[in-house]
Picture 1 (cartoon, helix red, strand yellow):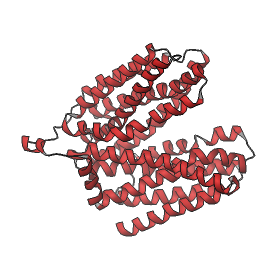
Picture 2 (picture 1 turned 135 degrees about the vertical axis):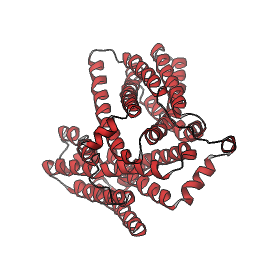
Picture 3 (picture 1 turned 45 degrees about the horizontal axis):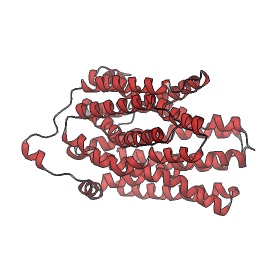
Picture 4 (picture 1 turned 90 degrees about the horizontal axis):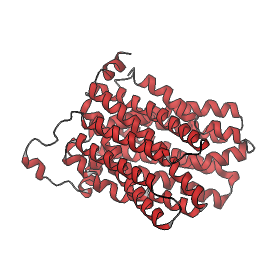
Length: 401
């Protein structure tokens, strides 16, 4: 427990810890509420699809450009401005009606803007952890982030459901705006180092292309980027498509089973993160632990998609969550340690964007293949995609060794 005590004694980390949980809670409030309110007011599925695109596409196109701010200015001040902007966005959305075209157009633009600043906020969070924690504290700090991200998001989802039952979903925007504002104030008090030691360093130009070049030229960072983004693509990205089909084909359309299975990996992630944060394993390279976690997680998912027993499926998914936790925690720690602070904002943003694109693409590819070949072959389609990830990770392990 000494590892946790050491991290929790760090005042600046505690400030960030509370602020990021407020941010996650606020984002879960507004993300769920806005989709529901649009459908409730318009009954138009096309509008939901359009707003779904607006939550992703602007971030992919403009996120890395905006993230340059993280590498040019004090990280606390940059995050403060982004969070203040986000608070203002949802305060305005609260005041707008959802039943006329002009208001919906304005809401669409605001959601797009919110999407754009989501990338630098995510990248900025990893940078703050790197700046306020010493090297030995990073694994434990990242474990705490993973644990409470899942807890905050689940709590947020439940809270929105309660608001819906009470017939007042719009209040989620006010609560979200207040939480973003509180987070902004807290983050602005965090002490962080100056990135540049002199005026010459400030003149150095870091562009999107130089950030791409940085990733490709650094073989370790490139290898881990490829491994983790492809893993994300064909495990988490395809899971949202495959789970309903799995329940239909292997469990005879048991809707209760679907509800149970949908969140079980999160249970495993929380349990494993608690143990990983104690740092029992410290002498093995992070790259090896990441690749081993990916391999075991993929093997368990292969077994899961062929299972026809609900109890066995529950056990497999919890175990799969346990094996994916090292990938999530050690991946964040690896990038924090390896990427130069002077370019970290843009590099992390590019990795996040690549992850978002491939996550969406993974679901699309799997859905397309199932549509063409038939639902009855879903287990085999997934088998081949996961075998590819396993082979890539095995090759990476050999190269690391």
